[in-house]
Length: 332
Ligand code: TYM
Image 1 (cartoon, rainbow, N blue to C red):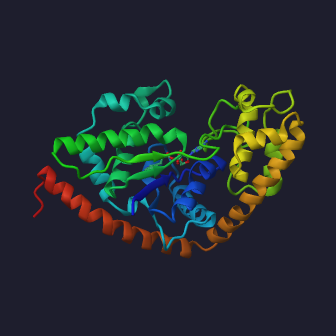
Image 2 (image 1 turned 45 degrees about the vertical axis):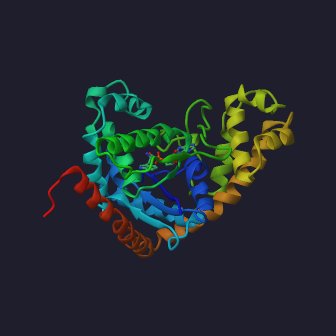
């Protein structure tokens, strides 16, 4: 069975973009793949985190996976820092990765901003650790949102660099899997900006734990243009806020963008927004409620993570040992 690896950073405010761009697709994939879903706590540390909040966010992401329908028996769910082989492999990969490859990463440029000299080394080498996450398990497929495509392509390049350097085909070249009508969910305040955990305005995103009233309010306040809804997908593409809301609706109802555009063509935004809010709270209300119930019982969540880490470790350790042997590290 081909193997999937994917992950989410426990940095708080899990949102509809994380759900539609990633988690929801994972739920569908678990039947056909051996799946490993990680909570990448070491990646979260590339920006400052409060220790207690990091621990709590790690449990919250775990709860989101399970509440969304990922089966912790069928899939491996664990947090990255529990398996030390991730950072060990990342070091070896760092020694093979030219700086020029990292200089091309757009996420680093966005997150570091203008003051590059003060950005951390971890933020810069972030994609190398991500390559180690994926390749440690020799995963072949990586389901992610559009924004992570460049990082998965870098993981392919690093796998190729290792294979060439040691004259082996040990690492598969992992494929990004990007699907659904919402591969890039945009901010509700600005249709040209990605919906993000770190946006200061909570009105820019729908959080997975928002209740129905909050969801309805945020959608009512979502930015739109003054015209009625577009008559064609082509027209929608010229109107970023309309395209975003229509895309979210299509993803939530599992319809194509064409169907949704045809259904609402020429209608007022207020009617469409009411329908969208209903759909969003039908899906997220159930998941958010289940997450809150699970968060009240951290013992269960911790048990899932402990068991997941043991299973992850059992795959990772033999792979790391083979890699150490290939690279000539003396292990006595
Ligand atoms: P992170 O935590 O930023 O996001 C987690 C997942 O959610 C997707 N996503 C979105 N999809 C659509 N629209 C949006 N607005 C949106 N925002 C986020 C992301 O594409 C991602 O799939 N580097 C990764 C975590 C990671 C990882 C890995 C992923 C670490 N190691 C190995 C895959 C494999 C990240 O920061 O995701």
